[in-house]
Amino acid sequence: MTEQLPTLGLDIAKAKIDACLMNGEPVTYTQIANTPDGFAALRAWLATQGVRQVHVCLEATGTYGEAVAADLHAAAHRVSLINPARLKAYAQVTMTRTKTDRTDARLLADFCRIQSLPLWTPPEPAFQALQALVRRLESLQAMRQQEVNRLKSGAVLPLVQASLERIIAVFDTEIAQVEALIKAQQDQHPDLKQQHALLDSITGIGDTTATRLQAEIQDWHAYPSARDLTAQAGLTPKQKLSGTSVHGKPRLSKMGSARLRKILYFPAGVALQWNPVIHALGERLKARGKPTMVIIAAAMRKLLVLAYGVLKSGCPFDPEYRPKSRKAPVGA
Image (cartoon, rainbow, N blue to C red):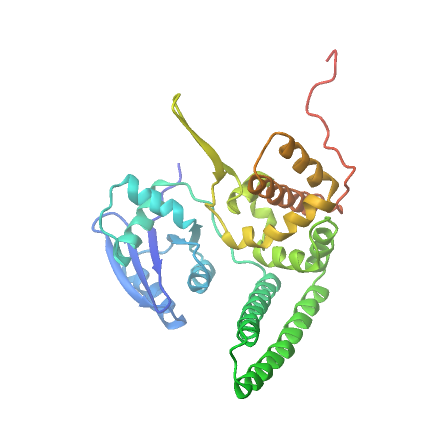
């Protein structure tokens, strides 16, 4: 039996990180700046605690924790990122009544100690660059839309209108440049180019959606099955059944990436019309009296399953493909 490593819980904020180390008794704490100098101070502090390797646990809540996770991974520590909903559920199970950065760090360290968590590895630099460019493009497009909305409000003085038009023109230029950088990034890396072509082969997933999926799911190999991927997106059904009296309507779990669900929402509507596989699925659900949103959610889930399939097989989407039956032949 392998010896259990000490565990380190990190509660991440924009400017600081609260850390809790569990390495026997007593439990120890420190706080560092969320900067490269702070990461070095954290590693030095671990050394003063007599820790050569630690299992680090932090929430997968966005970009603020990526740098420290990469730093500790490079220093040969084990790193796990968990869904924030898991920590919230653990706090409820342990009846933790206080919520501070320090108590969250301790909960993370304790959760890591008692759970067998998958290890995280940093994505390849090419994928990191693509994600950064795609998210920058999304930010620029959102800011441009805000200015367009102001321009269309009808209550804009001429001087303000001229200013809005100039800013929109600047956004148009910058958006075009970032889009060119994204295209160049894909063309320069064969893996990215091949992935994009495979995703783009699925009816309902166009060029933009394929790129956004690439940026959001950087390591498709990290998911053992399509079901694991749809769970990560929060697209697995959540049922509420108890005894004979509680029969709640099934809903999406939504315990996953809201960004992924947003990416798939509009393509699912297109796929329900034009993708024969998903159109047939939608018709079956419609015949069973399912509501529109249930049908759209099923189409989103099916799109993600198809995306996983083409990337795993390396073959473009084939609407005529039928998976081999797992049933034994007659007489076997």
